[in-house]
Image 1: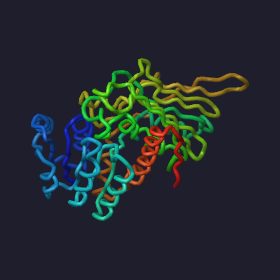
Image 2 (image 1 turned 180 degrees about the vertical axis):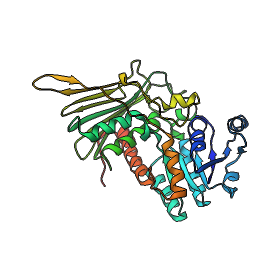
Image 3 (image 1 turned 90 degrees about the vertical axis):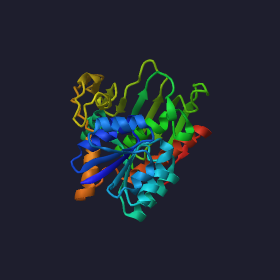
Image 4 (image 1 turned 90 degrees about the horizontal axis):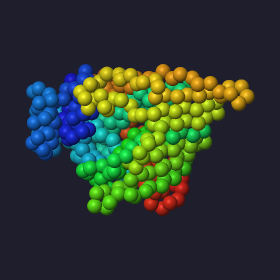
Length: 349
């Protein structure tokens, strides 16, 4: 049994990490660390018998804890992760891995010198719509892929709290974008060749200093154009995915339902999605076409922590590897650079 110390009990810690750790057969959620008394009390109410700490050093000094999980602001990931790994703890951090490639390399070096596990909670590799898209691309139904749009668009203004500020690693490009870049690399990686990004800033500086929207254009070696659009200034959300290809198109609306279900207390089960959200159209003879029904794949986020437990107890292969997350950081660094200069960035191997 691997004993886990979870650091942070906000949305990420309470809704995502704690329930999924609790469900993993080889993991035991031993303790939650939070500086806030209210959140420590909530953790005790949520998990009978759990211990709580009000400071990080207590987690690192507890010899029972084998694995530290960070559900903390983005700018804390690198220093806290390195500190934990240097204390001999295995380490999982919420996405984004850290703020930049340099920090990511330092984290990997800490894992290597201490011979401990390092992984990043890229749970949206197990979004049902992403798994459905991957299946469609793998079976060749659409033929050669030309472009893919991957969008998270809504209305409502800036994030609240630390996510509204650059100094803490805020902004949707680093937050949601960490998922979407990871998904793009999973489909067409290991890396991209060209990056172009255009940010808009429409928020009051008193509320936020991060982008209100971002339009990102990635070009892969095989010629696929992967476009990401993020922000909160859309009254009419764009499709979650829109694929244009040699033999047809695929389109899907709405986000994966697992997060909403977990907020209501449904954890660790495959959540089916309405097939009406999915559309696929295949070219026929001449100028004709036909609509093809899509049977969605059900996603299941608990796969991530089930794998972490199996890696540490049974030696299974790690599904989310630090080198993959480092590559995503390289791409995100290029996105940020392009947004600042207005120029295309070429990523060299």
